[in-house]
Length: 167
Image (cartoon, rainbow, N blue to C red):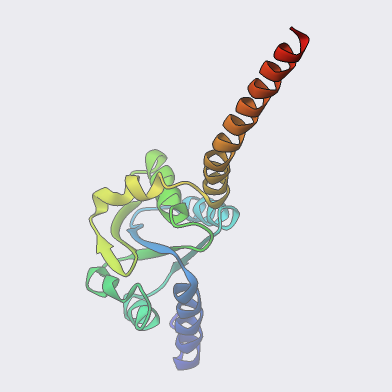
């Protein structure tokens, strides 16, 4: 069913709001996917903090205009589904990469982050970025290592003093 002008404005506004807050985006061709496939993809997207939307390319171009994803406009052609990472930069790439492993009809066409379009071959690299929680864990591990070393050093000094006093 075709959208009227008001419906189109609502779609553009909604996509623009998500694009303004997103950390990265992946546009993928979904030609040949069944309704069940798309439902499964949408369910996984919701669970992983990815905003997923099938939108006409002309409306998508208007929606991403003025955002970091404006650079994607030239690559938007054909039946595309847009995936925006809302929580961590790699979540949309992980979603598309993991889903494409079991369904070869989903093909990444355009990838953008940091205001630049990147080669589709960068999908794996973007997907391998740590989640926010994993990143915090890595930082904590790096911060904890010197503290642990200091504690072991202080314990060794204490033990040496105790041995010297006992002798």
